[in-house]
Image 1 (tube, each protein chain N blue to C red):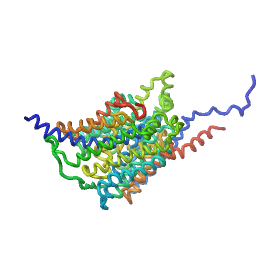
Image 2: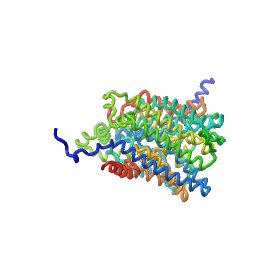
Image 3: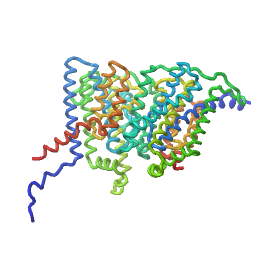
Image 4: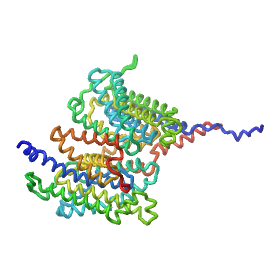
Length: 296
Length: 341
């Protein structure tokens, strides 16, 4: 049957590849959307934190640390950096006139600096870390590389854990309360300042984790965050700025659109399609598919 | 009727916004004088490199001016103004390759900037604030990627081989290959863009834009249509960017898709913020300053973005009115003192 062959050898592998990318995009987009939902800050340096995570993994990997340890160490290393960025930089302009614009500009400048520092430290050329798990398995007749399978499962676990923390724990309740009404939350004893900085650091750590996970699939280079962050922004806008469910749904949907569309048209045209979806979404429903963190 | 004492009737204070704009004009005049001296010196020693570098700085100053019209007056941050700059550059290059005439390229860029600006404005003005920044960003990305992949537009290589043209005004004419001639021309051109923008923003329409930045809801209650005013501002900014971009192929002889990308838009935003948003002249000084930093720092390291990024962050945190904000209030005080007897 030609149709089944097509499904098995063309469509399904493409969808699996898209799913692996989708899970990674969701990880990056989750950080962006939590930061926006809670702090009202568009973190333009998010892509550079993703690149930073990949480079820290590269550096630690080259001194012999195993990949599994890096999955924990790199996000932990980025946590204090994110915390300090929020307290030291973003809080300085947070209470000024136009918060959206000034914080966006500030993080944009920070991204430029991080990118150039990475270039200075590691050179502009791409690096390719070894795949920690080689080989592949056949699932229902579809060949799936083992590492992509691991990426999908690990990403799904992290996403589920984030959702569980935000919606099922006391800490998550504090985050949602602070996002809904920071003054009321503060008067009820929520340490809003720490929650803000902690959420920012957490988002940055998620971006770093995505960097570690994706490094063996895509190359590691200083501007690697740029193209990736465009996709993550698109996901956050389509899903709804500040919505966790939106990031997951839109992230998986848009990467599938990209993966399937690239079967029929040249892959270079999938970017305009995805950005086109974003522009149309901003025109018809700027708040996105789902409601904002703390409001729904 | 009691006669008021003379000391109680000071000269009617000049509108502070007009005074601020006049202070910008003073700074623009200083810039022109400095640029003329630079051109005379450059022509005397037969320099080509620095004159062309300065010409490029002025062209990108035009793009920054467009960003300032939006950001400084309507308060809308455009992260995709390179869309119109690249549009002007491509339209100008295509026109020059078909008809090697400056005025044909100028007219085509003016027309393209107006039409595309109207379309883009209708799309972008549906949203506000942070969504406006993202939608302008998205539109520029879509168009940039399309151009990058279109073979007819030279794809990733861009269009090369734009012919040298003679730029003529009645009896006078000079070749775009002459560095000093083109520099002086671009200087005059960008100053005209500045003057037109400054004039328009000092009319009641400009005041309306400033009022909208403060509180758009009240503007609507006063009987104005904010949507129309914002669309006009958007189209003006698009045309200014497009007309600046039209000069680029005359200087460099080629256009490339990079002109449409976020790097170009982002540089314009950095320029405006560093120079001083809402001052117009800040865009011009900012562009010159960044070019100087790039070529100076670039002479000993290629990592000039660290310096520019840190300077930019410092300005965002400590100088909300940019570097011009350090100087202009002094000039404003001098200007208002002059009026007192």
